[in-house]
Length: 167
Length: 167
DNA sequence: ATAAACTTTCAATAATTATTGAAAGTTTAA
DNA sequence: TTAAACTTTCAATAATTATTGAAAGTTTAT
Image 1 (tube, rainbow over the protein chains, first blue to last red):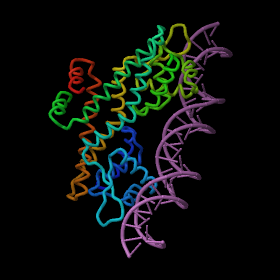
Image 2: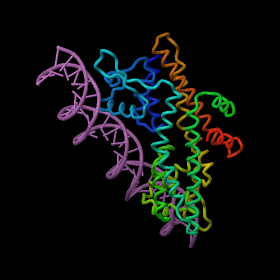
Image 3: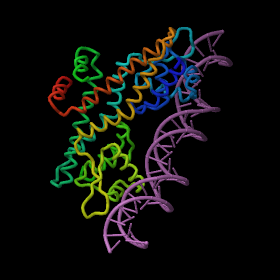
Image 4: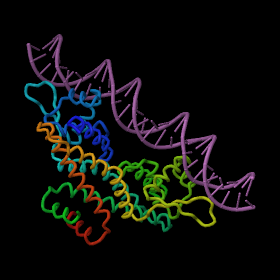
């Protein structure tokens, strides 16, 4: 596998993994491209490399900026805008976890809390609903908290000790 | 909020969260319905309750069974098949984490490993590709391992101590 | 062996989501 | 102020994904 093959393979794989971290294909591919680029890229360059339209590139770059993963780089003397992505995987993970928590998990926790707080009318089905949604609420909340704490730690002594415990 | 409202809210919320754990809406809704049901349900009952077609119900139940989340219950004297879901959230989390790891994360780790193992031809761009995909490989592998270990632990002393550390 | 009671399959269709591209908008230079 | 260089917006279209429903398949009882 040479450089070009490896690059294409990486971009397409990372792109299709997009769903896993909750973003679409083009968005993930743009991020992947920037992630292995040695310099900021212009919109033209991104369009060319990924064979996607100007509009698509513009919208997805905007979303990546909303997530805080991509930033505009203004290159002195250049009219065009250039883009680059966060290069530290640790920081990338932190941002993604935080955003997904805020956008998707927190709202669900809220609903689970509401649902599990309905009045117990004494019927079996109500008891079951309360019991099960409460269990789900607690699990979701715990998982959310742990993931956030985990990615927020730097690779410091705590994480290192945990890794030892867990591997 | 009464029982019916709470039930509808729970099913639709859990359904739309489906993407987060990598399954489709109908599949998540069927699982949600079974999760709060006090008894196994027949296909008829599921169709009726969720207002979805027979084919859709059949296919999604099959998928849930493939995941190992739902099981057929044969009720003596009954011709129909009845279905129920795993009721322990801890076990549910374990299964989902394991399946997603196997189906999606492991293959990506493999590709990242291949890509980061290409020959270093000394150029800057190759060095960057290797460096960044290697970082991503290590992060992904670590995250995958930790999540699996976490959900595999019972709520035993280790998890409890971690919770203390992390909350 | 037949029919009733059920489940599965899958081509057709609908719903959703992503993408395009050209017009409108913005910024900069002269 | 004008025009060139660029970006954004968004209605139209394409691609993808989910859903239907009826025919085919299976199982059980008689």
